[in-house]
Image (cartoon, rainbow, N blue to C red; front, side, top):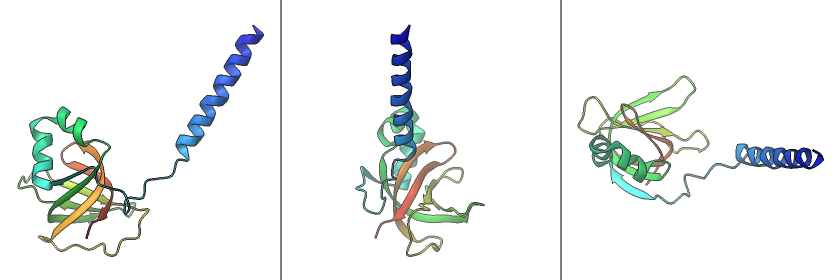
Amino acid sequence: MKKYLIFLLLAAIIGGGAAYFMANKPHKNMTEAKADISIDAVSLLGAFEADENAANAKYLDKVVEVKGAVADVSKSDDGTIKVTLDTGNPMSGVICELDNLTQHPRTEFPLGEQVTFKGNCTGMLMDVVLVRCVEVK
């Protein structure tokens, strides 16, 4: 019985330590992160529309560099700036949420301007979403 208690205590300490480490793990610096994939907004949305499972396997949780024309810029209640890139589909786009942990040289983007963002792909609901984005010059 004593062996089981020691084993459980040891497992709890290791599990707690792993959880603490994961919760306090530093975020990747997106400005310096190397893009895993470079693609235009039309092709990125097309990949998800054609086969979402294959696109998830290829793009999900990867640093994606996406190019396209600005279709919309909005600011959420928490202050996150979201730039939607035009895909030619009025119902779907590629949303690039600017990284709140990064100081951006600019946060206003004229409609129609060609831009390139790099961010972490979180998949598709109605739009393909990239989070923690930074503009690539």
